[in-house]
Each structure stands twice: as structure tokens, then as C-alpha cells.
Image (cartoon, rainbow, N blue to C red; front, side, top):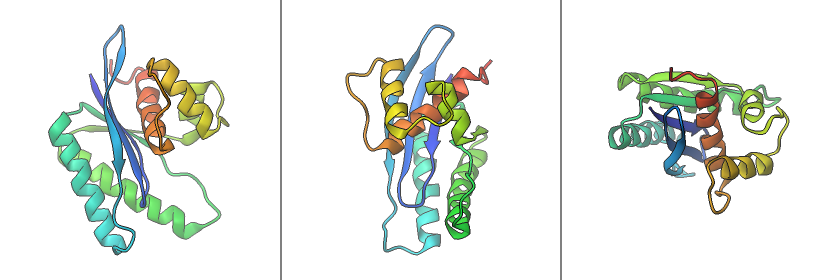
Length: 158
């Protein structure tokens, strides 16, 4: 099974492609999507949608695993993040890809054993789990891998 893991954001979105079977999980590809900061919100959302659509066409994942929204004191930031998530989820839905959403604490618990793990701890554990030579930066990438690993750890591909 091939999983597209996504750590959504309006400024930077991390993505990863993981292949998994009953014996192993392998990192196939990863990167970031960075809409232009000067663009309007609609233009940024369009960019996210188009880039995720390209990733889906290129890698043909079976499932999308995306970090769920979080509660924030800043309502506007939370709403913008929700819109970014929506653009990504629609790209998957249009391509008939199943979508699983995970709360940040659940992702951290799944990968690190603690729902309050730091981004550094998540990055470290992701690199150890996948036997990578080094930690991946920016943290948006390791977070996207963690979201994909959470999906795999939940056994959602069975």
C-alpha cells in the first residue's frame, strides 16, 4: 500500500510518500509545498490543490493521511489552516483516494509514545523508524512522515 502523509499549512505544507506491506515501510519521496507569501489566500489554496493533485497523479497513493486541525487561540489562523486542509482533502477526494485524519497528539503518541512530544523528538523517531541516515528538515517533512506512519500503525490499510 502507498500512503501520502501530509502536514498541512498555508505557508508550508510537508508531504511524504510511504510504501508499506506486512513486513516493512519505505520512504519513497518527500518534500514541501510553498505557496508564494505575497499571493492572496485563494491563490495559495489553488496552489496547494494543484500541487497535491500533481503528487497524487505522479505517485498514485492508495490513501491520504492528514493531520487534523488543532484548537488555537487565534481563530483566524485555525480557519485558514482548515481551508488549507480542505483544498488538500478535495484533491484526494476528486482522485478517489481515501482520507484519514489524525489529531496532532495521536500522531505524536503513535510515533514517539508521547502525545506531547516535541517536533525534534518526532523528527528523531521518524528517522530511526525508517532507518534514515539523518533527520529531515524542515520539520514539516518529518511531521508529514509521522502522519503517514500513524496511518500505518493504526492498521488502516488492512
